[in-house]
Image (tube, rainbow, N blue to C red):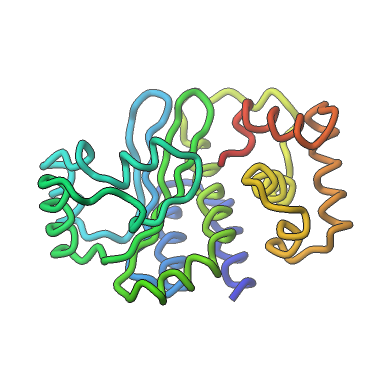
Length: 237
């Protein structure tokens, strides 16, 4: 399964357009065996793009009703840097309950997990997985796949940034994909042992990636390297 996901992400890295991103997200949806997977981002100019597996009918209805104004997922993820399980959000308002009922009618699912992603110059995105299932099964799924979902969210965002109009090249030496993965999980607060385990590498190899990233960023230590990578949009959490 890990090898298949790695292959899909390698294909995503070579993507030249939105069609390839759509193909990647459909393949990942099937690989994770969930109901839906969606990626939606807003670039620095305020233009919106997206790819995902929600129905066209629900997408059009969402836009028509301006549900972005009441969607607890959007509101909640703007207020945090960490992944959000939909059960943690406030669904108590009248407008919110009506929105939830309609989303369910359109097959969105009763479970959801969203990863907010922030890039340079105000870019904001959401990577979301939703499903129909029981609370305990969903908790098991998110616990088992949290790190993978964070890294996949980052991979989609990195590709999305390539489509920014007039994007200027990064001001520093680019980090390798493995260095980005390592620094992203370190920035999320995971221990080095946990990061190494998530990436299926030894702690020695992880130290090599982190030291290489630190050198490229001209940083004094790992904390300084994380701060520089975040401020320059090289990693997002």
